[in-house]
Length: 202
Image 1 (tube, rainbow, N blue to C red):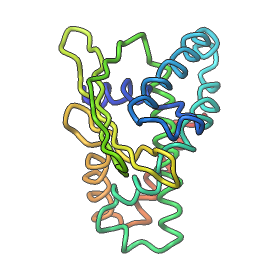
Image 2: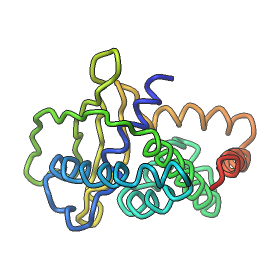
Image 3: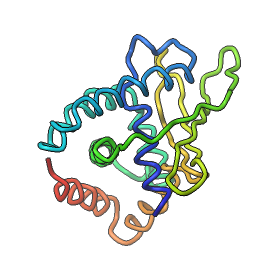
Image 4: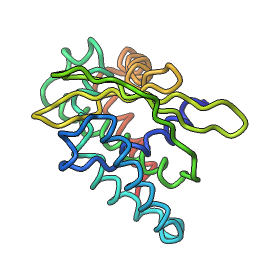
């Protein structure tokens, strides 16, 4: 789907949030880090195109510490999360994280200079969660709104959802996961995610 393609591009914005920036205004975190990660990808473009596996260490170094994968997996599972055992929950988080890491790696490899706009926003004093809006240029069409949901976890801003053109990443996965769980159970979903991750191996 087109929204999924734009999701890949949009996620490039937040791939390198540094701990030193955690206390900044969340929009400033987005703006500051966008330039860092996209500059690195652009500078290493020839190297990454020659060996795409090199993108994974970059993604794992920049994404994993700053996305709340457990919160995302829990939300994507919906009511089924409570039915999963602690071991199943750990497996779900691990496989979901791996799936998103691979997705983000694809996004970086496909980046081709799309422009990012940052509409004005206001963050209330003491806010614990915010929506940071951006707009991503789209060839032959109007800019695509890409909104990031962040919350504070131990004093750091963490991404827990991305909304692309009105479609929530977590909600989109929730409908997919629910269909698999109803058909194959929780272990079936874990197996499906593991298989997909192996098929897109490094």
